[in-house]
Structures are given as structure tokens and as C-alpha cells.
Length: 431
Image 1 (cartoon, one colour):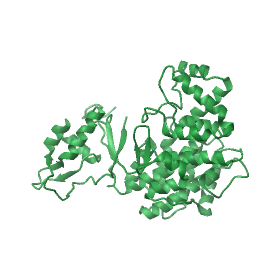
Image 2: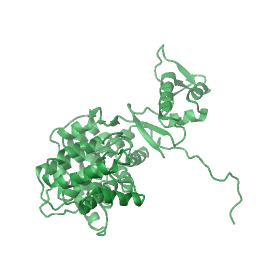
Image 3: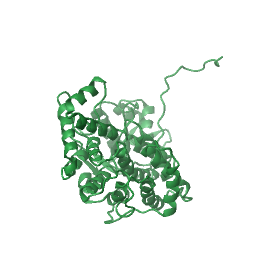
Image 4: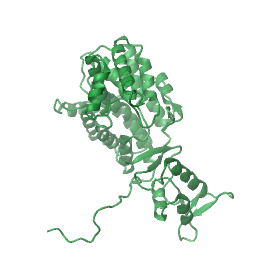
């Protein structure tokens, strides 16, 4: 499995560097670096290509040298993580300034993400992620021409099309209508982002005729998720969920976005790459599985028999545990707190607690954000696919932030090398 963890700074250029040298700086040769890391010399250059080390061409032209402090820091990380990271079963590091996950908390540009989501709208958090500045009261709007193109494309899909199908088609249609989409300057990409996100929402078919098409994005999205009338408490949960889900470090879909951006795909195409990965059953569909689990517990009156059936079939219990949080997912904790203020959510909340308590008898797992979203969607009359829609719309802002960051890096740097394990050549031509 290729697993990427963020570091504290933006990655430096992968080319050989020529920085100013302080008197106290200590440089290591390639051989010394390889010995300190316990890897082969060629692996040292793989670290450079992945952004984990920076190198400088030796004045003699016979090789490169490496900052001793940087090498020692990488060696400490490798020891901590139990391996050299040279093999892709280890850890590939991509430095980012966007999100830090640390001991049951996570931060957007150094600010506690749950506190941001409690005090600011989704649009305001998106602006913070993109620019490092808050724009109080900002809302995203899309020109009618962009919305019309996207709606026509989405309306042409078969009725059984899922939410990610619709969003991906809407993104492609909006791209085709934008002749300036190949402008990758920061201002142009930010302009695209502020139009694309509301276009994606507006392209989704409304569930109720009295849906809103003005105001904060959460208000516009509500009528495309459920026929229930909106109330302030429910809209607050939806807006907070969008803000909490805006980014979560280098998840699989975000990695796909960065690969696309590394190849200088435009922002629409980068978002389409993220949506393609999100649709996988191990990523965006997890909330729908938790939604159906909550409904089944409500239908049968207790979690015990439902959990027993899941275990008997060899299935993982959805909505529980997260590889990055040893305790409760902070996003789940924030949403459960808000759901307590919605009376109609009480039965689903009780079902979720029963699921956690029942499963805890054989596995010490805590609730994750999928279970919290399931409580919200199930108690709001939404379909099981609603959490996937919420997730995709929310994460689009994070994908744009990562694309912007990647556009500032060396092109095509997201290019790992394959380790060939097939038959050794030369072999005869097949008959």
C-alpha cells in the first residue's frame, strides 16, 4: 500500500539545490547518506525524487551532497515508522502546509479544524485553506451559463446514476464551457474554484420544489439531499459537516488530485481525478454503508443481532475506527454534539451508541465521521448516498488547495518507479 504522510513545509524543488552555506552546515556524501539511512545509494536519489531529501551538486561534478541534519531527521522518522520507506510498502512523504493530523485532533493551516468549523461557514473555511485568509460572509456563486451546461449534462444521465457520477459529469461539462481552464495561475485557479463548487451543487437535481438557490452553500445543498423542510439546527449540522470534511491530509482521492496537478492538469480535471477515486467502496461509499447499518438497527430494535450478522458474513462494521485516530474521530465528536440538539435525530443517535457499545465488546473501536454522517442523513430523510454527496462537495475545496500547492512544485514529480518482479528478459516472442 502506498501511504503518504504530510510534513510541515512545502516541498522544495527536486533539482539539485544551490543554497547559501553557513559555516556550521555539515554535508554528507551519497555513500555516507546511504550508510546513515541503511539503504542503497540509488535509494538516496529516490528519496530526492520523492521530496524527502534535497541534494546539492558537488563542485567537483562527481556526485551530490546532502544536509546532515536533514538526513538525520529522515533516519529518525524511518526508525520511528519501522522501515526505510524505500519500498512503496513504506512511507512516501509529501510536504504540505494544508492539514496536520496529530493525536485525535487535526488542523487547517495550524488552526484547530473543529473550532474553525464551529465558528465559520464552509465557504469561509475553503478560503482559509486556499489563501490563509478568512473572508467573513463570503458565498460562492456560479454564472448561469456554467450552471446550465452542467445541468444539461447531468440531466442526460440515466436515473440510476449515483451522486459521484453526476458531480463528475458536471465538472467535465463546466470545464468544457471554460476556454480559460488551462490558466494555472493562482488567481485563475481560485476563480475556477469559486465557480466550480456552486456549479456542482446547482447541477444536482433538487429533491423538493421549494429548494434554495441563494445563500450559503449548505442551504442550497439541503434541497438536493432531502424533501424535509430545512431548519436552522439541521442546516448548521450540514454546514459544519462540509467544513469538517473539507480536507483530511493525503487521502487516496487527494493523492490522485496531486498526481493530476503534478502533470499540470487543469483544476476541473484534477477535481475529476479526485471524484473518480472517491467513488471507490473503500472511500466515499463508507458513509452509505453506515447509513444502512443505522437503519437496520432502528428496524430491528437493537444492534446486537445486526452486528452478529455482519460478523458472521465476515464484513467489517462500517462507521467505526480510523487508522489516523487511536481515539474518537474529532469530526464525529463535533457532529454528534450538534445532533444532540435535533430531537428527530435522537433514535438514530441511540442506534449509533448501541453500535459502538456492542462492537466494543470484541474490538476497542470508536465512532468515525461516517457513523456521525449516517445519523444525520438517516434522521433527515436523506438517501444512503447523501453522505457521499456531502463528502464530495466538501472535499472539492481541499482538492483545489492541494492542486494549488502542487502547481507550485516541479512538474511530473509524482512519478514513483515500478519494482519489476516479472520474468527476466530476454524472452522469446510468444507463439
